[in-house]
Length: 429
Length: 141
Image (cartoon, rainbow over all chains, first blue to last red; front, side, top):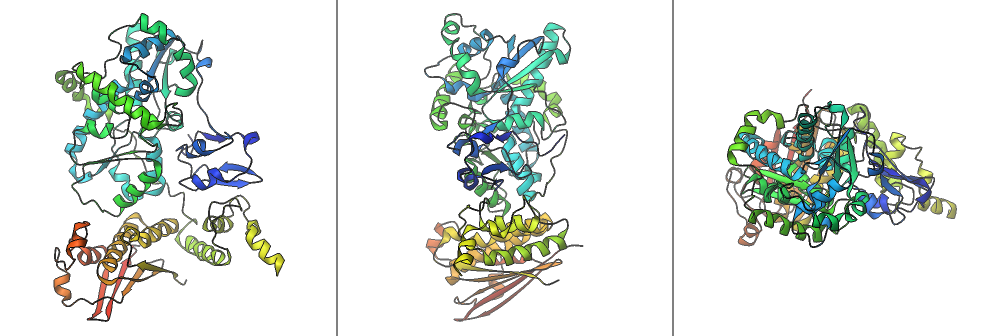
């Protein structure tokens, strides 16, 4: 399995070679060569910033498609992300959405928000039992996990080693389907309805476990029109009791929700990749002492509701999600499960834990070893002295330093003659 | 081989920018492939030094020399100097003004943290002239 597999790709014919994405990529993973913006796989964390920013819709993401599902499996189970619910207006009962999902051809539907409550419970327990690892950092956003894996080696030991709600939901869904139908595991298709490309990446190349339990990841925005066409009919024929998640599970959709579910008083929740990077820098410098218990980080503004595959603005969706979550509480559903049921599940607490460690991937290292790296760094500094320091991006690298590094590491045939300012100066002399 | 040298200017007027040297050094040490713990210690040492320079000395200069086996950081300011180094080295002792304390700084952990993070630390100080702190972090074989 390719550990640097990622989902974002370039639709070449749309790319004009402008430098919009180049300048916005938080890990400097993009280079424009021959007027096309291509991605350095090892650096890309699938945050989707380039997809959000590209004015020409040239940055896309791989995903599976609803249209291809028919006939592929004998039994289909949808596992919708909590962020799906807030994409609609004036929905007071989530059962309508879940009924509509069944009407589009799924045999069953299992809420990821219900699984999220189990993850909250497991997290709460793990946090309490491991004060030496505080602050524990959320691992629900695969983009953040990937960012820490390549950029923040000192924080890897703080990663919360609990599986994300999507995985737990997938396992519950498959087990339930096998029990109810008697089918083999491979005949059952588990389909995640996703707010972001990062979950596509996770399915193909997961962190914390060997193989994902999810078979297909479809995008909310692709599936939305299909779902919308069934909503009226679903409202009239609503099946009560499909939704079992409470306030805690539904709150996971937006920033702060996961932290709320841990019950911690001392937590930090940040959203938006730039804010997240600042927080990680500060955590690495140990600026928080050891009283902070939990850190929730979401790559997208407002959390998963602001994902690349969503339709509604993240902050508007967040407000709507709050109402939905509160309605669940009014129904007496803070947790979908009773404390007794939760206790029973947690006799198998290990079930939620990672089965495979995440290790540091020093992709930004300049050379093969330290001597080589130091040699290369000296060369980088020497080249940097010659460059104008404008960070204009016209050479195809995001900054002058990045160009100097590309030249030294021989990336993409970068050459000092790529600098148009230097060329202009040379031709004037 | 020779060392790689970096110079950072610490702006004494801007709290928000204290930490820039630490951040920049950190990313370079990562590119060079130093062990995570060495990076962590250098970064904390420099960051505390930057904050000290902003609080007490109206900024100053930081010079870093990176060798394969050690990182040497020299922080030089033209501040008021430290009257009693032994006292300043005690955890919790601070001369920071109310205004600084209200910003959440000045807990009296600066120098103690710097000493804790480095393998060697030397403080030269003269009242009315300034302070130079030299810290070395060794790279384990």
